[in-house]
Length: 204
Length: 303
Image 1 (cartoon, rainbow over the protein chains, first blue to last red):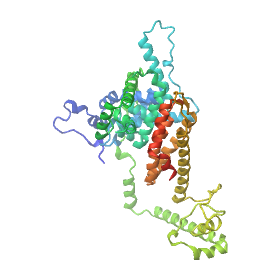
Image 2 (spheres, rainbow over the protein chains, first blue to last red):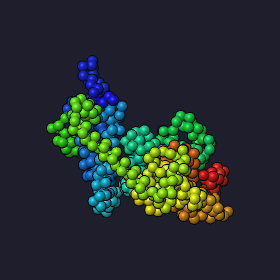
Image 3 (tube, helix red, strand yellow):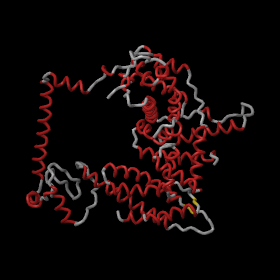
Image 4 (cartoon, each protein chain N blue to C red):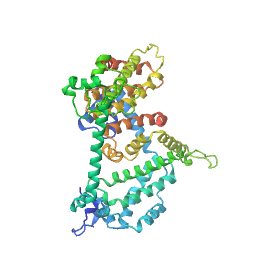
């Protein structure tokens, strides 16, 4: 099986020219050679979706940041194991999923509740008048976040990957290790549960 | 295309995952069916709401600094330096390893000794009349060496005596005996697991049949008075979880008729599970009609 690290464009004419220079395969190949700048570009490209994804799983900002850091460190150490046929984003989401799950398991073992951010708790009395639209958006964010927290782990995982990260069924199956029928069932149930809680904000 | 088919495909359609032929059929159906079009619009509106979800997360420079600090003094771990099973096996057979060969021989000897000991011991425990049966009543088709059956009668059949359970059961009840409560010490075979799964599936199908009958028999009034289906709904949710697991098990075991039956049952369970506690007669009637039309109850009954 060919690994991405083995794909080096060095020595090929125009190898580092134009957009090809920053293709995922090339960035991985360069990062494998120890090029920190290439890895920084990978970080810039994927840090935002990954931190959002981790945050959706754990519901806590600081923890999401820590876990995203851990995800990238693990990714860096395991770059050589990335197969050529695997998408970099899928691989990174897979690592992030494992990191988030480990964290949730550890919290469950220590009987700690996963704390939702208190940032979204509406406490607007000392902030002066707030435009209605902004208020509604804040409320909606809070409702969505709380609804996600109430989904069980598998459903939350599948739902966030499909609805927020726009992954295909095949990608979700690769990230989660679930079969396509299972993830379709989980996704349907997650949508139904979310609809029950978020439905009042949906205008048809 | 029927509304049910469209409804089942709608999520895949909106996710852009439906195959071309299905997508074309759904598109055509949505033009002609107001109910499905409404469901489609609801899903679209939901997607827009989720698109507005703002976690207000910012990737701080400190995050990269922390990652850079942790990765700066090391290069990615080279695959060559990782443990490789192939290399390990190659090394193992490259030069003679007498210690390994000795250890393997000891393990093989211990296993053989254990098997011989167990067989001898179980023969000693066998009552003489059953020992006699062994030589006379063993069915050729059942004569798989080393197969251990689950304990269905009063005592644990010994290893190697294949015909004994059959003799005992036919002599006592003549029909399938109930599963014994205390099965500690029994080595299960795949056949035993399959048997238990079959029983679970049979129980599940019977419960689902009862549920659908109950739904079918619910009375609806003509004055649009809401019907309380909270019990049916709760029951359906419970069965739905079991159904998914059993359907997957049946698929993995290659029991396609069972898988098909459970697959046909699932939409009904989903529909009932998604009803509000007090539903309108119209929604209920739609489900009842579908139960009637598809003859799912008869299919479940014939399982």
